[in-house]
Image (cartoon, rainbow, N blue to C red):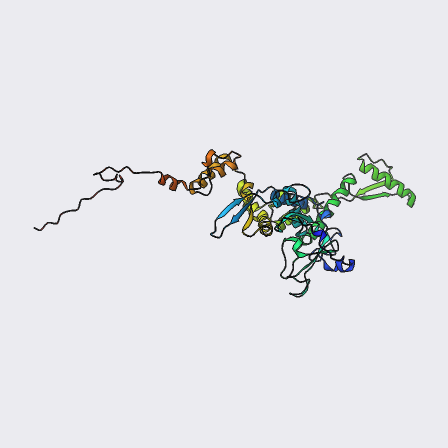
Length: 421
């Protein structure tokens, strides 16, 4: 097994050149009106809808079973045991943790960048570690055919150049002529900034005891700055501890009456969640947004199917294609997204019955889905459709001198003799 760190021999790039590549930055400028840290994943994850969307997508994708197949020249497929890349792909954690790291990189940064750490004797990867996209840069803006172009990109990690053959890159969405994918964080940086500002407003509101600022004025005497500071601290302390305010007849307190409802805090939060859900194709109510239209009246099963199609399939299909490229020719993997659709026992067994009827599943496969052992002596491995299987087992007894049994629905008609009258 080869470790790529021992064979690189590339030089470290200068800091100025590394910054100019722009791989670790967002893919389009973040507005100057946003919070400075709105384009960073750690700040964005403090916003509940962003965290909920990232958690939902990462956990759902990582829970989908993986199957590996081989396609032969005649178009037939054979199920194979999983390659070691999909049983122990990383030095840390399990395949579930590995897939979560991949999805989080795509959800937050728009790029999942893996470094191939180990290969088998045929040079196919057996271990891939996902890198922090913020530490990865790629030069892809040179004219085609030149080093650092779309068809010959130059990759670097932490300032060290890495050969392209040791990189597994899965982009979210890319512009024509670019390798580095667009960043979702840059797409909703303004939404994140607004959401964080709303959360800070709520935190300040409750830190002030649920009472907005106001005017505390003395009507008979002039208060110097030192005395005003003492009085202000006592007033703020009383408000935060929710204790009564005691003052003389010459003091007037007038609060600035801005309630949570008037500040539209709830509406702002809900709108932000709905916008973030639209970017990821997630049903808004799953991350605190507003659901409308006929979606409210659909069944839970139908909503789950729509969630898989709109939100999960783009990640699953992209991962299937890129990860299958790491396998020998003719082999590929498939995510069994149907496993995420939970139906009742009657519906589930009705589906099993229909699959067995047309020969799309064997009894052993159906039993495996129910965590049952296969039938002994290979009796459950047959895929023959049931009508064909039943027809092959039917024999019609033949008796010499007798006509075969006729369909009772048919009526024999004797031919009429022609009359030559």
